[in-house]
Amino acid sequence: EMVSAEEISVSSTAGSRPTSKDAIINLDHGDPTVYEAFWKRMGERGDIVLPGWQTMSYFSDVSNLCWFLEPEFAHQVRRLHSLVGNAVVDDGRFIIVGTGSTQLFQASLYALSPPDAAEPMSVVSAIPYYSSYPTVTDYLRSGLYRWAGDASTFEGDAYIELVCSPNNPDGSIREAVLSSKNGKTIHDLAYYWPQYTPITGAADHDIMLFTVSKSTGHAGARLGWALVKDKDVAKRMIKFIELNTIGVSKDSQLRVAKILKVVSDGHELPGNKHRLFEYGRRVMSVRWRKLRAAVKASGIFSLPEFQSSLCRFTGEETETYPAFAWLKCEKEGVEDCESFLRNHKLLTRSGRHFGVEAKYVRISMLDRDETFDLFIHRLLSLR
Ligand code: PMP
Image (cartoon, rainbow, N blue to C red; front, side, top):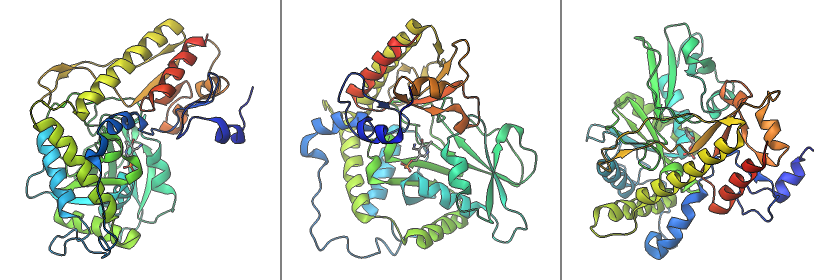
């Protein structure tokens, strides 16, 4: 039976809780609502109060190259990276704030493309790549850059390679697959946080993108940041944000500064029970155990396997628990896994959007408990 668009908008779980056992389960997006339970338990610790007369000016800090960057937000970003050890944040590095890392991704493309080239820069990423990379790259049909597909089969000297690690959709740890004098890379490290993967060292790349969407779960704040080595690249990224949105919401920056402060305090103060990354790891490990058991019992699906490594943040040997399940349908005669699951009222994203076969689907592991448990129940009913 087919599910209509109307039925999905009325009764699916996107943004809400399932209303019945046979509700449409929407795990197409990576909406990080799993973190709501943690922040509810934090009570008022994450609150801020903003008087009506505050945050009115466009400007945050005119002495900073990134004049719309709130100093307290920048401070908490540096503090959190130093605590977790997942990225180099030395004084030479520029922090640029963006309306989600989605805006910073576009700012990076703008900054890395020569303004006067005869042909658009080729933008590539190894398959399976994050489904937004091709669509966001091409939606304005820019003359500066153009999506050129799978990095592994790209031939040419000038390009921008997107490296997502741990990778959306499959959770793999990645490095750039291309190298050349004229090649540039953007490292999308949205998932390089201890709840998803062992922290094996401080990343030290030219452009690194991070987001609160996947670190603390505050996707609705629409806030990301870039760590940038080169001053001229940083300047061009800032120019893009000036032209695109004349800066980034100060309210969001102040709110997120508080959120990041609470996260760092939680891990730094002894005896504190409120540790976000511990909570995240625990929830993700339980979910992955349930998922692997259900997949095994079903006999018609498979999942990627991961090796554990020493996490320098926790000091323990830890496993990888990706934010998405990259599920392969092994059932005889089923070529299109997304349709197969859709017919069982389970909405996922087809491998086709990630540059691979429709036998694969991506499923969010970051929804609320009720929705996740219903999903496991649904998987177990499939044969
Ligand atoms: N990069 C990756 C790899 C992502 O998975 C996502 C969110 N799905 C983003 C970037 C976008 O993050 P933001 O909400 O900060 O725009």
